[in-house]
Length: 85
Image (cartoon, rainbow, N blue to C red; front, side):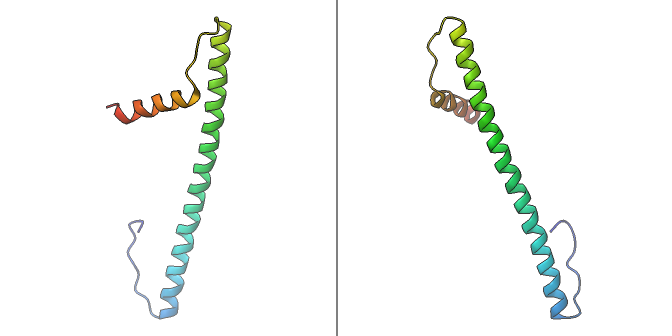
């Protein structure tokens, strides 16, 4: 636990307070990490949609050649990351 030693307690009440405080600290840390993850995922989805729109726009300005669907692009990217060294 964070590299700290568990202190000696003089009473059950003191020990209970210690563990409660520690659990609240970890709960807060978890909530902050979860919120950051959600924010990151939302930003990633927005960026992906923007990049796909730019790709379509660039393709159409160059003669509208056929593009794979966004799902296909995602599958290709996933496969690349799974099998790249």
